[in-house]
Length: 92
Image (cartoon, rainbow, N blue to C red; front, side, top):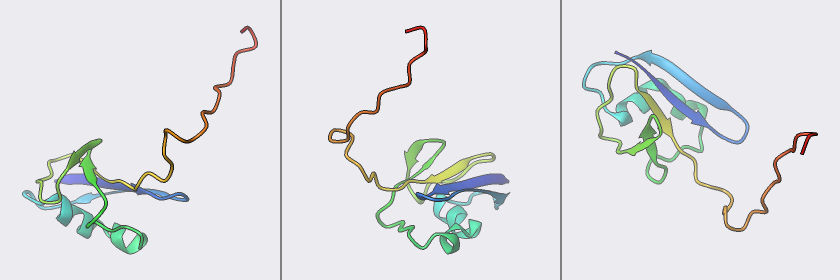
């Protein structure tokens, strides 16, 4: 079956698509993708993973067309970061 694995650090975004055997798990997909060799900061013992934005476990089975995502830790506390003003239209 055809799936994808996605990860982004501060400088680079990668989405790898490939074929994997039916019955494969999220962990197997991540390993087979080769993404762990591209990003040495990935630590699956502490980082969350998901499929199409929904948190899941490493032992969850992937399905045809799934996009497995590896999530980074939040680096800024949204409560303490100053809000950026949205640009306004000239008509406002």
